[in-house]
Image (cartoon, rainbow, N blue to C red):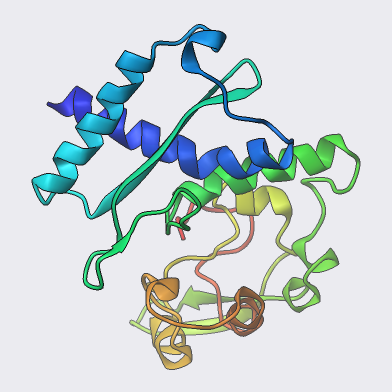
Length: 216
């Protein structure tokens, strides 16, 4: 059963990771057999996804399979909005949380290959509000002191989780709570990323850039 779950999760992830890029390249649909795949076997994926919907384990899902530059399979099952009964569409947008970090990392490396940035660049070069940040250092008595960061945050720091940015549970948790930036912040709020980052840059971070691994 676990392997089936992994297969379904992978199939859904593939839809999230590649279809827009594929369609942007003008790829067209193809009969599976024309690219060395089996229509019958691909339909098993549809059946497996539909079974999870019927069992109430998934509200809906989308899967895509591309091979030899053509789309051999693209199907949506279930609901995009179960409460309203809106059916799933193949261009639905999903919230994939930290899975976006892998996508962002690949994007950054592509930009470096193109010479458009260096991972050693300070983040403040592109987002000026991050050029000078502060850090909350524990004072040993349950409080903390806010001090200037020893150096600017770099893109490498962001990629390696060493920028000092957390989910707001560090020494200055009170400041993060006051700013309303804690936990799964983007899950239930309607605010642009730019506005949030501008506010986040003003908060004391949990560590000096490059000194500690802090997931956030």
